[in-house]
Length: 85
Image 1 (cartoon, rainbow, N blue to C red):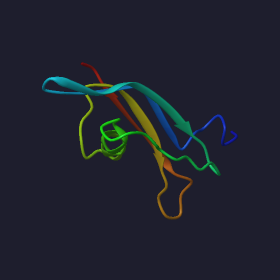
Image 2: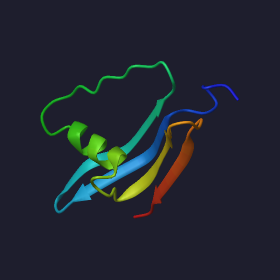
Image 3: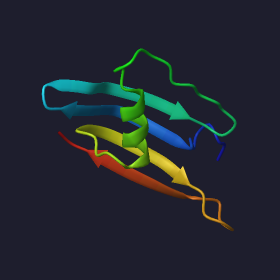
Image 4: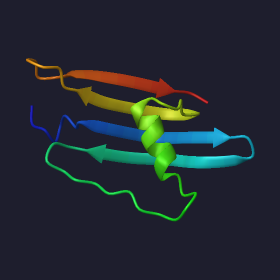
């Protein structure tokens, strides 16, 4: 399969709520091999929250994170997390 059909990272409908505020409101993102992405935005826009949710440091309220985690000597394993709020 091509890299385009197997992205390294897919984020679908990612939501993160904190008491009294919605930090992420349904983020979608796809990253394939060879791509470079940059997150820009105002203070409080959710940039750090997105990275924390994708990396697993913070559990999202809802949404899905799919990532390919390369393991030495193998092509990589796919990890899928679905969060329901």
